[in-house]
Image (cartoon, rainbow over all chains, first blue to last red; front, top):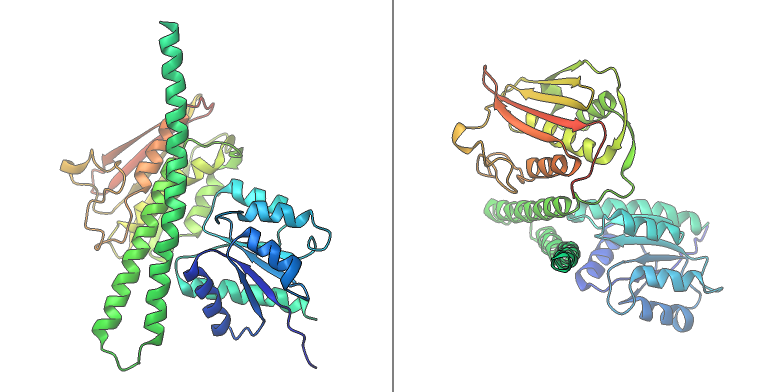
Length: 136
Length: 242
């Protein structure tokens, strides 16, 4: 059976965090196409004008310049074409208020960016199990 | 006169808000480069030729350990700065239950004999549940972590008066030297070098701040047979002192 791999959009402003995700993908043998946007404005533009077909998964940082993750989520959920994409929030913020804001905008998961790369690897492995279901 | 007082109050409110914002921003923005250091160290280590000497590997471990310590310190500061926040935190808890949960999560519990003496008639209490749990976790963890005996003993005694719960946690560890007894509630203070016991020195500072906010109290005594006794009072009706 030939599996159709879904593409993934990573919205993240920190270069090392982007490298971190790429490295975790290759270590977990994840071959899905990965698009990267540096902030919410750029991500919306990519979703509306660049990436075709649309990604099924978005991995979203919260603290970003220009348009932060929560603002991006609000705008995305209001857009008929984009509102059904699964979003995983990935952030350093362990604040209850940030978590509640995110869950109120219907996110599929909330990943705390851990200090160690090993822990991040296992979070990404769990994520992969989820989006493999989207590929069936 | 009244106007002066009003102005002071206003100024205090502004300062409090500035302080909260400052801690939040600093701790989040500092975490990003900190994580980068830790991650990049891991990548370099991963990419190294396996034949490199043990010195390099042990230095990488030191580097990662120290960044880890920095992270724990930032988390400690962040927790301390949030002690004043009480939204979403009032709920009912069962005191003996959160104590057994706290014991369950300990890493070294196999080598510890726990004795819980429960004299409570009201085990369930509607209170700042998360904060009481934090205090219990910090004190129980400390009772085990700083104890250098192979077989350790921790006694937890639960008593109550009409107004408050009195919880006493004692251990058979080394205790706190008389000369530094007054310093143990300061943030980041540790009796030994942080290399002897890997600890941040934030737990007691956070616990004592929590007790101050809820209108309780905490004290330290040395046990007759050696070891520490921490006793704290948790009021049944909380009047916030923020």
